[in-house]
Image (cartoon, rainbow, N blue to C red):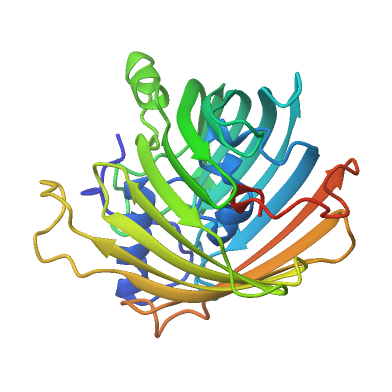
Length: 335
């Protein structure tokens, strides 16, 4: 069984020890896909968000983390969601792939959200969502190279397994405010134990998010957003975001991400330094129905001298015209 204490590397050429250590921590922590632009489509972290854009909406993300580091995480995700039954039900589908060194994670989830009107208009809703799907875990033995030749801990053959999984979320929104809570990777860890799988399985992740939008004048609106993420094993992280919406066409944003210690985790060193990052996000409506985004974040921690930052691109398309002209007042959760 592969554990953090086993010594192996997925790098074919020698590299700085600090890179190997931080990459190993990334693998062993088994974090969910990290997308800085999650704020533009909450379905990536919360199934209760399905249908909130009302039109059928298709969006994809691609993220290359720690550019210049061999074996660094790369993530791709595509999602489609929309609302039916006069907006009371949201449906969605999301497929993601993560490559971290020798390990690969492919997931597919079907999302269902029941959206309850809590006010006299359609802008105030409380949504409960669930996602069910599968997770394929893979390990490419060709990318592994033992530090100590003959180490039996390093598998000689590639491995793969498919596990059932589920997600759950709650989402509340009104015209100017939103808040959500969700849990991912609910069953995969326990399914792996039943099957005696030796592959590392993502831990359950907990997300708590909230935000608001405030008009500054007819052309400018500001949107602060906070995201708290915890998986009970790795460091707890907090994202602090601030966005400026210009003429309902261009989003300009900045964010700061840091790890925090909310409670003692016995598997983490008590003196583990915080990992911090800062970045920028730009998204624009290239056409009334097409959204294109880019983000760049730069590590402020131990990796800052050994990589060129992380790049992320996104593209989204509305298949319908309900929102295409932006006739209604901007809703906080729709952007």
